[in-house]
Image 1: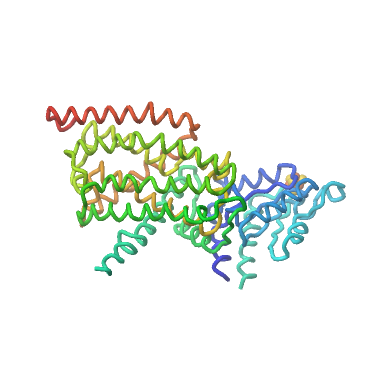
Image 2: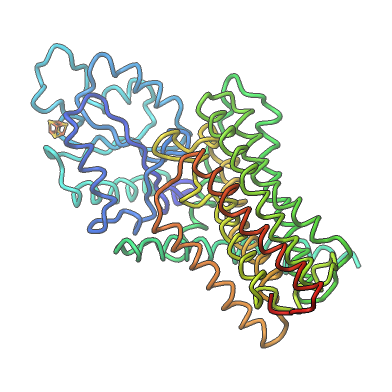
Length: 148
Length: 310
Ligand code: SF4
């Protein structure tokens, strides 16, 4: 485990990118900050700029319009970081599976930009806040193992 | 002699001590905020983890920024606060003060805010220049009452310009001193960038303001500067208004004063909504500055006719 992966697993700063979601997953992400769930226990906090981010929380089925924007966010963020695909749409396009306007899922688009970036899938429509936190914690654990 | 200097700068009143207490203070801020909101809050070393992580991350220099300014400016804040901390702590513990050191400290305390302004201006992002603009306006707002309040304290202690004369008496134990203390506490709140006055960094509207383009180690330097400010600014208040830290066992009493001032600041932070830029200006110029001015007049009158409690 390297210094940086250890640091990220100790203080994951979250940045929230919507790639065309129905807004339900986004609300569940905000739920993680409420007193009942409180991601600050793990050092997480929501930041306003991708330059500060360690985890990009992507929601939605990646519409054609949002793809270039998402790629720009990936370029703007400071490496290393991980991408968390939150919700069934982000994991596999979900109910928009055969839609003509969706080019997702998030994993595919991310890997096209950079093979190295780790993507965590958090399924559910929308995933419960417990599931999001568990996915996050598992993903950070994985990051530590990968960067041996 | 050289060893003594190195020790001063890097260990006791210097870097190690300031950072260590700053990390603890920052944890107290986050933990108490969490408790007020009925949450659990972060673990003890969370601020240290944040800094350690930021120093391991990539450093991005955005296209369109003034490169050298962008790189050098983050150092201003930590250096200014480090020097201020050394002067303040030495005046308290070793009584090694020089004439006019209070003026030096007042100048040094503006450096972090100035660093934020310059950093915002040089990063070439419209939102960060907007944030820098707001920070400048805020500095113009709170400097006036702060200087008036400190002048009150100088008048109260008999016109000595050295910090050692302050740390031996309770300025706040008189009416004028109390008014001046309240006014300067509000200024400190703005100087720390805490909530009623976090207008420059407003995360919900301009996304971190002047710091929006900073990443990795440079952002870490800004965070370090904020940690140090959490120690230095309350320490300044205590030295000038609340009778200083004292030595030996008295230092315990000093530490209690520090924690109390910090908790008051945190409670103000957690029970107020953010003000607009113009509201903050009005608050400081029409609210806090007249209060400090009244305190100053009271102190002068009290000195002239010899009433100590005025
Ligand atoms: S996964 Fe469900 S809740 Fe989330 S964006 Fe897609 S449709 Fe909406």
